[in-house]
Length: 372
Image 1 (cartoon, rainbow, N blue to C red):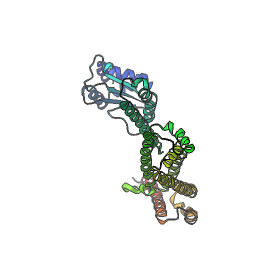
Image 2 (spheres, rainbow, N blue to C red):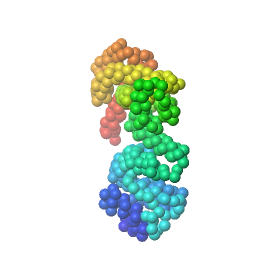
Image 3 (cartoon, one colour):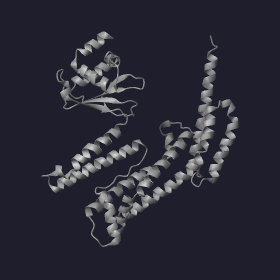
Image 4 (cartoon, one colour):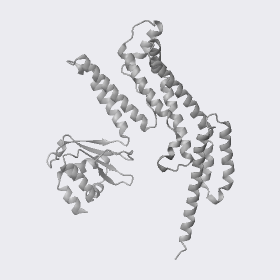
């Protein structure tokens, strides 16, 4: 081990990386030494140093407390904080003065939250400050404001998607909507900023697309790709759908969006019927999700008992389980459709097959213990 670490320590680039990683992640030197003595990991870092086309190096701490280097941002959420090294230019990293060629920093466990903080606290204030627009043509300044707002909205939407929520983007000039709506209520003939109206109509189109995507979601998609979901997938789907639709509904009921709807209505906008339709769809879908979760959640206890019981003893559990399913069929306003019930019954069959398989495997293992 010492020989491998010694060959790496002779390279000041490895020394710089090791020093930063140990200080940032608060690790003992042994963790870094173990990383650089593993030839495959060492080759990844050397490729980053010597290949101009390799621009990013990320070192993360795995759940097993081992350091590993990767050359792209991790897709899955990190369990622990990581460290990133990004080249300022597409060049080989020199042995001397390597830190001057790199941008280094922490990688949070939720990178989207880190990006959101960066946009909110640095990019937006910097690019939205009118004092930084001095000498710019008005059209350029407006375009920059629009692009900054678009970036901020996109980050919020992605942040919501990561959390399983649909975030509705706001138009440029959203802070003026409430006052404009009040003026229209007092005087329907008063002039309105056409740029603001156009921005509102633009986001209504985006809202309609987002809401339509949510409406098209189906619990039957759990079977895609040859998957064999169990009933917990159905219950989780409807609980998550209820949470998401409630979040969308609360956004649509916010004063800002109600003001936008008033502006569209008073100005006879062609997009007002679109807004009414999407709002109606959300209300209808929310009522459906509330009804279905009300009746599906009592099944959780029955499914849990089935999973915790050996299959040979499960017979007495099936009758009360199917009795509850029948009650759902007869009482739910929205789950009394064959398409929905077939999904649940298929998943119940999958659960029974799963329990049979588990019991079989247990018996086979016990049998092998006595085989010479």
